[in-house]
Image (cartoon, rainbow, N blue to C red; front, side, top):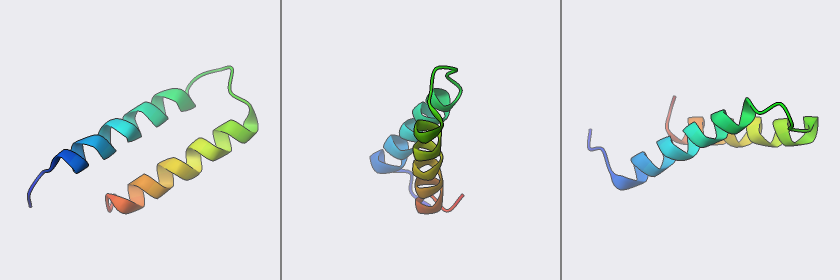
Length: 47
């Protein structure tokens, strides 16, 4: 399997979203939005 720039970009995006999810100042709506985005990326990456 070839590892591409797109794969790297998705991994870094996922890492950033997970990091933001740990912030204490997030509202419940924002947490929910982040979780949905994380699930979307994980599905795209077949995780």
